[in-house]
Length: 258
Ligand SMILES: Nc1ncnc2c1ncn2[C@@H]1O[C@H](COP(=O)(O)OP(=O)(O)OP(=O)(O)O)[C@@H](O)[C@H]1O
Ligand SMILES: [Mg+2]
Image (cartoon, rainbow, N blue to C red; front, side, top):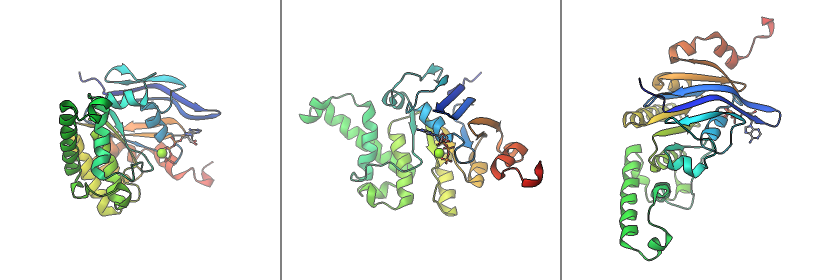
C-alpha cells in the first residue's frame, strides 16, 4: 500500500492562550492535490509554518516520507524536499526573476564560497547548471519571458507565479502553496489552476491553501477543512461542499438557529 508523503499526527500549536492548531491529523498522499481550507484565523498558515520549521509544534509530530521533521531547521526541511510559497509575496525585489530562482537552487550547492570566488571549474559548472534549471522552471511556469526583469517591477500576477517557480527551484517533492490565487481575476485563476495541475502531473505533491471554492473544487483530489484550529472535514470536494458543519463554519450560525 502507498504510504503518505506527509503526515500530521495530533498536531497542536499554541501561541500563549491561542490554540492555533488543536490535535490535527492529516495525511497527504504522493501526487495528490490536497486543499486546506477554512475561515480566516482557522490555522491554515500555521500548518505550513509548523511543517516548514518556522515554529516547533507544542505537541504532536510531522512526518515527511516517514521521518519526523521535528527539531529540523527550516533550511534542512527545504533541502529535504519541502518547499513553500507565502501568503504575502516574499521575493528578492532587487534581483531578476531568474536570479530569484537560481538563489533557490543554491540550497543544494556543493561547491563552497571559495570555489565560487575563484571561479573553480566545479563551481562554474554548477552555476551553469543551476541557471539552465532556473530557466526551465520559469518556462514550465510560463513566465520565462520575464527572466531578466527585476522582481519588484513585475506585474503582481507574475510575482505570484515567480514565488511558485522559486519554490520549485529547491527541487522539492512536496510544495505548499499559501493562497497562490489571492488577488487574481477569474481568467488568472483558471490559468493558475492549470499550472497547479501541471505541477502535480510532473510528479509533485501539492498542499494548497485557498479561499476560492471554484478553484478548489476544480483541481483538488481531497479537501481538509479547519475551523478554530480543529479539523472538521476531510473528504472529496463534492462531499465537503455539502457538509453542514463546513457550511456553518463559513456562513456562521444564523441568529435564530438556537
Ligand atoms: N506567531 C503568532 N503569534 C501569535 N498568534 C499567532 C501567530 N501565528 C498565528 N497566530 C494565531 O493563530 C491563529 C491561526 O492563524 P493562521 O495565520 O494560521 O490562520 P489562517 O487560517 O492562515 O488565516 P487566514 O485565512 O486569515 O490567512 C490566529 O488566531 C492567529 O492570530
Ligand atoms: Mg493564512
